[in-house]
Picture (tube, helix red, strand yellow):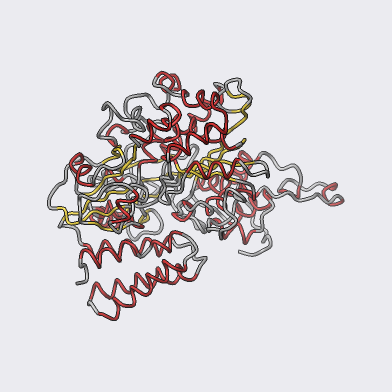
Length: 596
């Protein structure tokens, strides 16, 4: 790929796909037919680079891959240099720049699936379809951990289709589809959301009270179950009053960093530069995490309402909802919810007659764990590679498009609703937290507990199977613990040398090969490192290499090297990926004696 166009032409199907998204080109300067007037008049090029990711999705969804001609046409339409667009397209794992079958199977080989027989599924797929690379790929966590092992088939077409196989133990590969894919159940029907919430329907739930009990497609059901009470309360309090309630509630971010939400909102609201933007980070990619998926599939209007409240409090007229590309059902549910809310006057101009103008644009990720980092998500939305930015400046000062931006994840935002419904003090007295429980348990799923419950109490609800050897808290970026009486609070887990992180609770019994599990964690961070900074780019590779050597023969030299590499990544990496890549490995060596 070059900095200049090389004359490759898109097919008629590719051209039509791009034009359906962007509209027909106005002149030859942006890909239209050449007219004599175009040769005599210079037109100022106005880049629409922020539409690059949607355009790449459009072609990949319809054709199955992105040809050079399609990429060149997208670049002409958006005024983006071809080499830069190529760098973006190749950054994401769900895109292909080479021809491939229209149907591709993604087989999860990550932690929860590996602990539940995912390796056997991978071997059967490889035996039936051959080496990975065309009709199937090994995949990081698909966010279907409560039904592990899992696989996801994505099929290009008009419209594109997706099929979930979970659990995939019985995945049939005897009759592969003509295009090399795998026949299976379609996901366009009702989601088995209730199965993902073992507590569904129980009294006392706050965040999960509607999941599995109300129709997620019905706005009327949502309002009958208390929906939009919080937004009406927000209008009564005013923007400053909403921020005050959030501050007094003590709500902190639920994505892992635990930054006080009220402080973030207050800082953004005070910025004189406009416009302000709101970004909902729904790129839930931490292995073992699926709580945001369950909320988006089971209670999508709650997220729409919560984003509207946040926008009102912080002065945002536009919100972006950035959803994982591996979440087709959540994407469909949210699109429907956004369109319905807009049609009913709950998005757009003059919401509820209160003078608030706010709308939400849904953006899909394309397979990049790093885009869950709060500044990498800005670059992704803006049409650049999803690499983290240096801070300061912080997002509340200069974020999306260089403007003040509020970034919160799904669970953080939906917590704002009960704060306004119940009041800050009542909320703080029984603050809810969601946990994603998977692995060696009888009833995997998302559980809602009050902060302060112990890990033992949570596992009693889920029911352990076999002999529990360890529990991984916080996902691949977390740590292993053996003390089941650790309080599930930010302070309690910190004192135990662990982290709540995104709420992952992966239970491992004595049948799990811990060395293989650590190798999978190391491979995950090596694959997902964006490569921007040396400590992470090199350190994740060296960590995996050392673990491979230790798996064959334990040596003090490699253990010392591993610790040096881990400390360097933690101290010198630009973002949380590199800073936490050593955590789980360190805890497994020190607490579980994996290489002892």
